[in-house]
Amino acid sequence: DQQVKQNSPSLSVQEGRISILNCDYTNSMFDYFLWYKKYPAEGPTFLISISSIKDKNEDGRFTVFLNKSAKHLSLHIVPSQPGDSAVYFCAASGTGTYKYIFGTGTRLKVLA
Amino acid sequence: DTGVSQNPRHKITKRGQNVTFRCDPISEHNRLYWYRQTLGQGPEFLTYFQNEAQLEKSRLLSDRFSAERPKGSFSTLEIQRTEQGDSAMYLCASSPGLPYTDTQYFGPGTRLTVL
Image (cartoon, rainbow over all chains, first blue to last red; front, top):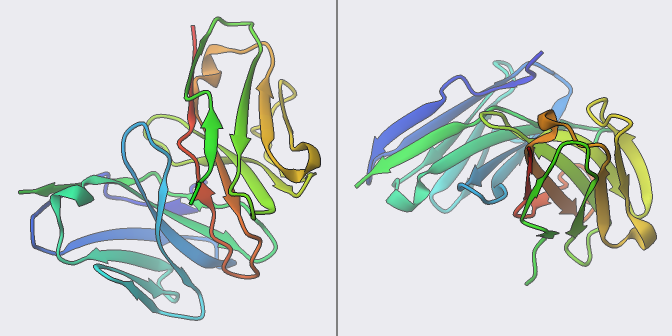
């Protein structure tokens, strides 16, 4: 049972435009959510996180939105740059557990 | 600023052999995690240490897998009698142990290929 789902395996966006990556979860006990970026042959790099007491968190070009009622989060990258091309994973965890549950990733390609 | 380091970065072994991987966490982090990632999947949790105590293990961690964290510093993950299905990227992460919003930082991974 996939508790964290990223239904779009890939996304292509023109440089300078907005990239929107989506993630859905099923477990209502999740209260902390994160986005990681991964380049080939490297480990995931932490990008941005949000706790369930917030609905938005912003860090430079990256903004994460959380809709608890829909069990949905999204990552917005504005403006998109070619260096943003990577695989993006969303992850979730719940109080009392320390493990992260990851989605299957979305490959973002930013076209110059 | 030294991040999480893992050695070796690549390991090729024959089926049936034992392998051991090492992870050095960020120095002030007291929590350490092991994950496994296969092609097309996200990382899957294997085990977690708080200092030297192993507090959680996934059912993915069969009897052939063992992890240690002596003295609460570096950690080792050993796989005995490797099988071709063990081929994967093994990722280590560490975190400072903050309440509620404890972020895990990952190392570069060890890619295991079992022939």
